[in-house]
Length: 73
Image (tube, rainbow, N blue to C red):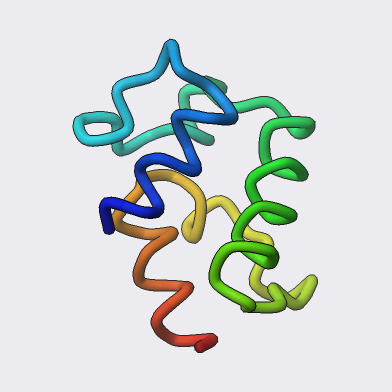
């Protein structure tokens, strides 16, 4: 989880990823941010995220992203 937090802070250091749970719903992350996060997850965790998994529920919070990575690993 710590590695994911560092990855997310590299993309957007102005967001408290440990507290936010509506990153998509509240339009905190942009589509460009999501693209950067997907690429970073692929590179860092060696996890390919299929298009079917690129849904708001998987990116609304750091925990949701972590859970998705665990499912896909």
